[in-house]
Length: 386
Image 1 (tube, rainbow, N blue to C red):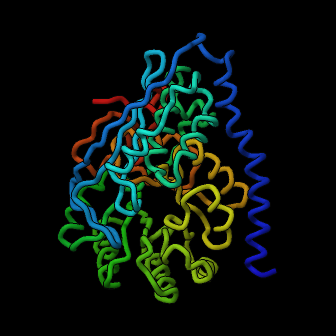
Image 2: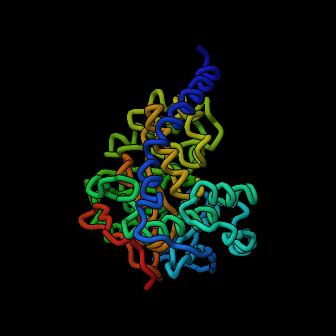
Image 3: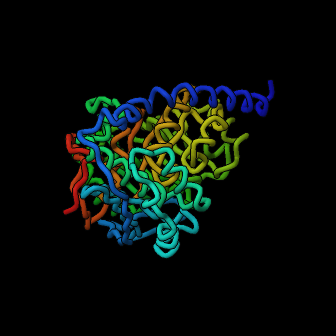
């Protein structure tokens, strides 16, 4: 069977898997959202508000193709019956066309007052998604705020509402960006509380990638996860580098090649000594089945897939087709990070350190203790404004 037909069959199988898997995975939320599951009958209309914010990086953050000392983000609030849910959508430079100006224009088009019940999650989020194509970051902020609001109305944490076990949340990786040897050594001093180090690779000079790994290795023997951010353009060089980093304790590699180089990426995955994960290649639910056989796993980010509602469907689909799952993030406050952390009990790897890399966090949320993600028992996503 050629790979094109294989992908078609995989997509059909995945579709069946989602249909069956989604019902079970969303059943907890549906039953909690029933009238019988609520503490009291509520009425009213939802009101949405939002504001742009700028996050200051503790260090200049460099990845393949981008460098920044500050990052924009947008905060969303949804108020209903005197209770407010908080959401956030980070705006990294690779989200083309999504910036402070455009996302505010998008959010201004949303009319939640037409819905009398925040528990109509499917209808509300379908309406928001259909307002305009793209704009996945502000859509995720609305999704997060709705989940936070629903959790508060039910007085339960979001992870518990999903039926997850908080203790199954994994360790988070702590990220070291592309930099000089001196700065890498300085950044490594901040990694002491964490058990997994994430290294950004894909520098223009391959020797710079090797220097980064060697510098990290000279200071710690902790496991490494690596992310090339599409920086390796040649499949033979990429495979050579994957073997090289695997010999130095790398557990996995994200996005070695550009987005749509599927045949070359499948060639690498077949020969890779460590799992390969698709990040830029995996944006939304429909991407998951077509990446089977091209990557071993997928990287889900809420800002890419429009939020928790679709992220959980992506997890179910990946499980159905036998793919691994990583939960990633961008530069965000503890609002966005706490939201992402709610689904980490269901993933193989977690990279939810975006709030740890900024100096002006505006929320108190989930904590990292001895490198492990600790989900709190606050209702909703567990984040409160400072």
